[in-house]
Image 1 (tube, rainbow, N blue to C red):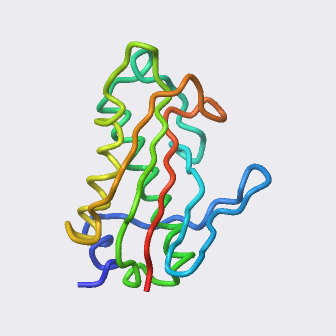
Image 2: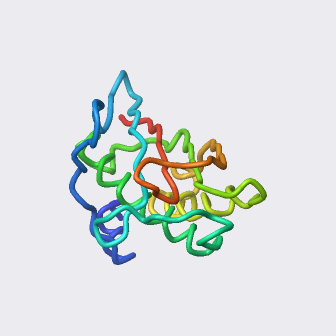
Image 3: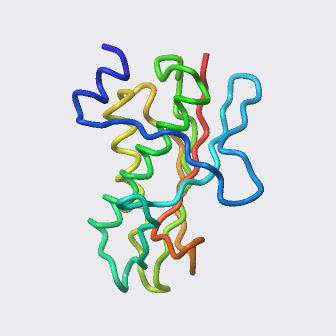
Length: 152
């Protein structure tokens, strides 16, 4: 089954690549690696604003991370030309806008990691990962995630 068919079965439509908000590009390809710039959480086309541990709980943060993963897949498709060319999701880095005493950044990030496993399967979708709590993210977004993938 193709990746696009799997996405369709999950009810996911990939968005177009977002226009960068500053002086950077959405992705850079070097050799077989594609580095995707950080994508912030959006809801209804606007930044998904909030702070984990203060105005948001872990479950809502997971939903935000999943939404980012969908946006990242749209950018990855543009970079690779076809998601079936993805050989491995190599690394995910997640920044979670959170209070100083919030400690579930890794669980928030699971919202993205689990979607990558659903879409690509355990062999291709499993990845190395970091999840950090930060004091603020651009535009007040609750989560930002960047990704590195290997393509053929």
